[in-house]
Image (cartoon, rainbow, N blue to C red; front, side):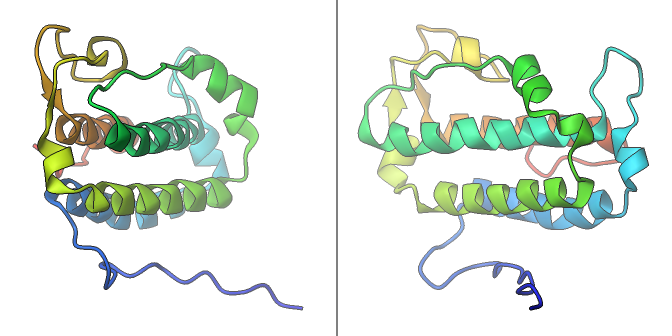
Length: 181
């Protein structure tokens, strides 16, 4: 029996409208996926230096980031604060052995998890997206740190997720130009 073909998700689904952040994320993953797929397993497994992650490990880390932020973005819609547990990134990458993962499967996992992230981001209602939250720990878990006494919105945190993804894509492809400025 032949496996079902993988069908790309639509750019925009009938029951959701893309926000700017969701649109940027969808554009990024649609643009980068073919470039990632063009890399051989050997190219993706190569570490630039012994102490730096390989492309496989970077993409694995981005899957972990999507996993952690997925639940954060959902939970943030039920509370007035943005306080979440962090995670030990180096250990997660090592324990999941992304260095030996099948490259094409890893790219597909990264792509579809981020497609779902774009969908989640797009579905956050505007009042929830822009509500300022005085209580947060983005000084500890965000890439773009926010001091504890400064209020911050979920939109800022979702944009930070996309900027984090782009930061790592630039490590893989130095010629990559960020979409979200």
